[in-house]
Image (cartoon, rainbow, N blue to C red):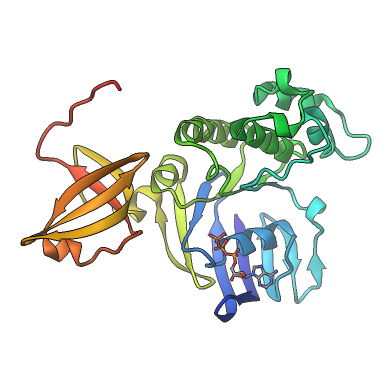
Length: 290
Ligand SMILES: Nc1ncnc2c1ncn2[C@@H]1O[C@H](COP(=O)(O)OP(=O)(O)OP(=O)(O)O)[C@@H](O)[C@H]1O
């Protein structure tokens, strides 16, 4: 079990925000931190990995204490078994793929791990290339492989796929699941993409203003158990138009905009930017290759 019990005063745009967090994550789980911008997701992960010092509290990982303000324990980032993958890859631009991985090795450490990771991440043929010559998806595979060099127990993925197009996202989602299982990791993801969260995570924690306001299994969390729809997509509300007694809601799903008729009761709950499900159970969906 990973137990976080942390307090940290942060400086948000609107003034001070106190992050006050109790979070228990089971070993081996794939969990997602979800919540609006500025809720404290990245700060939580930076505290877990030792990049940001909490004001007070404890971080316990299994039997070990990584941080305790009372006992004056504060392990350095390199002493914590955490691999960190950032949204913007954070690769060293002057090093090639292999050197980016080798940089993560500690002195006198066996380099066999590098070969294994190059192969697993299908980077063998790219190993002499500099990051600037790689696609976003390739860069993110390098960043992931680099995060695994130190054989972490915990893998932190801070919006790792949000800069990629949909096709690459889907491919790398599969890859993230493979990594999580193969290396028996506890994985903590930050994502805003509901489809991605449901596909990857066992459980979800929602943060708001520095606290956990909701937690649950991924499928229960978004109310997927509430309806037994025949098909269902998640998307974002782009436009809400009133037409006579009904409303027409434009929803962005992937790269497509669809228009859905809604009754006023439902429409009045919606705002532009809301995440919604579009579902149907009244007729059979048709599938057609495009
Ligand atoms: N080192 C720091 N010291 C003080 N305040 C900070 C520090 N780092 C971040 N903050 C502030 O804390 C708040 C929470 O930031 P954080 O990056 O944790 O949010 P988030 O939930 O990850 O948001 P996003 O989804 O936009 O990445 C922000 O208002 C930010 O400006």
